[in-house]
Structure formats: C-alpha cells, structure tokens
Amino acid sequence: MNVCSQSETTSQSSRVECSADVDAFRCLKDNFCIKSEAVCDLKKDCSDGSDESDLCKIDECELSKHNCTKDQLCVDRKIGFECDCFDGFTLNLDTKKCEDVDECSEKNDPCQGRKCTNKVGEFQCDCENGLFTSTIPCKDANKRYLLYVTDDNVKVSKVSIFNEPLHEWQSKTVLKSSSPKTVDYNFKTNSIAWSEYNATDKSNTIFIAKLDDSLKADLNNVEKLIWNLAGYVNDIAIDSIHGLIFILNSHFATIQVAVIDDPLMRKTLISDVFTDAISLSVKHSIIVWIQKKSRIVIVNEDGSNRRMVDGDNDEYPSSVAIDDQSEKIYWIDSKTESFYSCDFKGKNKKLLYAHDDDLHETIMDFLDNAIYWTSNLNVNPKLINKLRLDQIHEIDKDNITASIDNVLRFKSEIIDFKVIKKDMQISIYNRCLESKCSHICVPQSYECYVCVCPVDHVLSDDSFTCVVKTGSVKYLLTKSEPICLGKSLANVKFNN
Image (cartoon, rainbow, N blue to C red; front, side, top):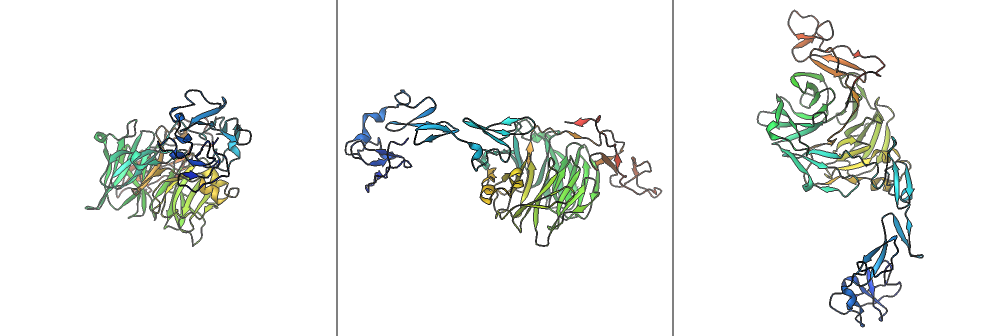
C-alpha cells in the first residue's frame, strides 16, 4: 500500500513520480512525492516539512498503531507504515485485501514437473510413493553434495538446488592433493578414491581415504590403493555394492577392474576404449562412454554385449550420465549444443533440449531426477530436472532455460566432479555375495556374474578357480561364462 497515489510528477531532484510502483513519500500539502531516501534525513524537501515530522521516530507496527488486518503483515516505513501480505498471498489493489496465490498456475513450475496442488497460502507437490511436500518440491532429508576436483584440492559443497547458488568459498576442502585428476565416492564405506599423475616418472597413483561425518578426509588414514600405474588414468568409477573400482587408462585405451579390498586382484577387462570419462550403473551393470568423441558406447559391466547408440556424423557428444530409475542415458552434444537421451539398449534416441551456448566440453552427472553439468565456457555447475527435459515439447525454450539453476558460483576450473549423498541407501542385489569365484567376481547383469582372473592367471575348467599361468596349463580363458542365479530373486539378500 503506497502512500503516494498515481499520476502527478515534478522536475525537482528529490521529487519523483507519484505511482504505486514507485517507493516514494507524498507531501501532505504540496500534492507531490519525494524519494523515500529523502524522508527523515534532517532536510526538509516538502514545503510543509511533513517529510521531517515527529513521526520519523515512531514505529507504528511495534506500537500497534496501524490498521492492518490479522491476515496482513505490518511493515514500518520512515514515516507511516504499509500493510503487506504473507508468503503465498498477494494484495488486491481494488479491495485492499490479501488473496491466495495459485502457485501451480504460475510459469515457474514450483514442483519441477510433478503434480502440483494449490492450497490456501501454499502448494503441495506429489513426490510419489505416498510422499508430499510444499515450498521445496520433494525435498530429501538426505542432502546432496558436490564432490569436485580442482588443480590442487578435492573439495565438497552442499548442493543448493532451490535456494541461491552457493559460492566457491563456502565449499570445504576434503583434502589437499598435488595433482588430482578424478574422484569418486564409496557410499558403503563413506570414503573417496582419487587419482594423481606424476609427470616426472609418468605414473599414476590411486588413493583412498575414509571421510568423517563432516565429509573431511582423515589424512592419517590415506592409503595408496594402486600405484606405479603406467599410462594416464583419466577416470575411475566405484561399484560400492560389489567392492570394485574401474580404472580408465586413456594411454592404453583400456578399462581395468580391481578389488578394492585386495587391489592386486586386478585385470584389464575392456579394450579399445577411446574416451576421457566413463559412467557406471551398478544397479543395471552397465558402463557407458563416448567413443572417439563421436558415438555413445554401452557395455555390460564385465565388458560383454558392446553396442552403440545410433548417431550422425555432425554430432559431438562430450559427456554422459546414467539414470537408473528411468533406465535412460543422457548426454550433451557440444557441436549441436543439445541434450539427448536413449534407453539402455541404445535405442529410442530423443532430442530433449537444443541451443544452449554453455554446452561445450562438459562434465556430467545424474542423481535423483536432476542432471548436473559444468563446461569449459561456464565453470559454474548447473542442474536441470529431468522431468522438465522430458516435457520439452510442452514447454517453451524460455521456461526450460528458466529452470536451469546454478548450483555453485565458481572461479576455479573443475577437473572432475560427482554428485553424492553421504548416507545413500540403495537396494541392489549383490550378485557376488555367494559367488564361487576364487579371485575376482564381476556382475554381468542384474542376475548374473562372471569370474575373472587377474594378471598371469587363467581360469581352470571348473569356471570358478583361477590358477597361475604356466606352460602346462592348456585352458587359457581369463573370464568365465555368465553364472546366473535364476529368474526369481524373491528370497535373495539385498545390500542396503
């Protein structure tokens, strides 16, 4: 409720247009308005001095000297007061009453694509599974964190999805490192693994460290997991359920697998991998990468059933992420500046969103219905709800752009990042829980696993036992055929 009415204007420097949209004060007798900052400044701008009256010292709201109704909020001004509306309501300028705002009908889509139900003074989002929430759509009590690598640090920051983006200085340093290149999180042990490259002897070391409740590493318990690795380690991916770590080595174009609790149990599992990063789905036992910056490749976790997503020669995919729940693969194409998706078979390719000039040389991750990415043109990590992308044909580009949020405001270059939950719980069947493998068990699908032999070992004819490779050994396989546990998993144990 502005004390100035509309229409009148003046040319003096302290005078402004009297309008409901202008924060101003109307002089009592002069019939014009002055700037609000000129009120109660010990200088009379109104000829009658009404802008410097004794009312400057009175807080009508605190003294209850106002006429705001009980459903309104009294806001003290330098002289006088205003009656404002509480959150969820707006002032009707004709009736001077506060009326409910229908948030569900507004363009900002407060429920991020989920069903929205308007209520008096608020709204409610249908989060599925019988859960509902308001104000912050489908808020998870288990907070998300951005675990990221810079030139000399591994850092962590809360992911502020629905509030203002956090700044880099609000991040916490997990540990200082000489030259970290990639990082991943093991939710089963609340630990991180990261790789460092030594340019002098051209070798790689993979470290592992337990985190405390504040997600800070105990530097006294940092261990070398694997060291003196030749080539160049571009990426690592942890299978927390089966206790495995996958290591991408771009120099040799291979993916190795190692047992975290016994890293000498290590084997080159997949060859001809020409990429800079890999994405792993533990639930569905697949690994995805971009081959030669031109094709999306999908393989089973043991390297079998290699398939490619159909693509055009003018495409340039730069990063991929896996959505376990919807069984989709999302990727960003730098050349066409677009988001795409397909299913786990590499079929049903779909263009989701095009023409974003920030989509160049990106890093990407996925967690809880949100796609996260950062690019070399804009280091600020961003996110968009996948439900918004899936509705691209129903929503105009401006609305899609409006629902892309900055997660953090950065100055440093992010080399790698993962979005994590500290206490993440995943019900995934451990295919290797009762395996008969003597050395390395690798899941091959939701129901099956294979036995893999480490370096200098081969598989004996029982398909489970690895023996040292000698001249007398004729059976030269290093990986068994899939060992499946049957179609019914009703009575199996799950890791939580």
